[in-house]
Amino acid sequence: MKLKNHIINEDDLIEKILPKIEERVKTKVVRSIICALEDQIYPSEETFKKEFIKRVKKAGKSKGKIFRTAKDLEVYLKNLGK
Image (cartoon, rainbow, N blue to C red):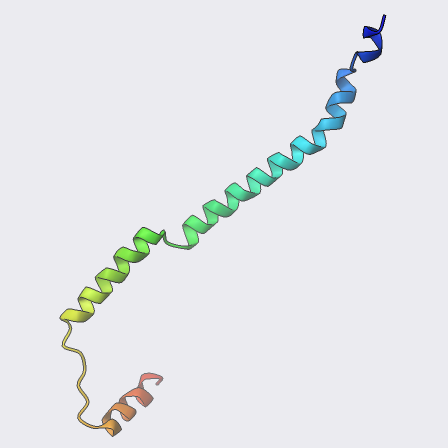
């Protein structure tokens, strides 16, 4: 009978495909970890936009500093680092 020649041993099959399955699972796990870390480290684009808009609105309401001369500005900038 020809069918006996085509019988596949389950253990051999598992041994053959197991490394491929393990590699795919590792890749998916690593990608999931990277995505989770990125979400914790970097703000989402929407959050970044909202914060930026808030800062721009706040800056627009501020009167800011006025320097009468370039020398006053220079002195102010030098003192920022101190």
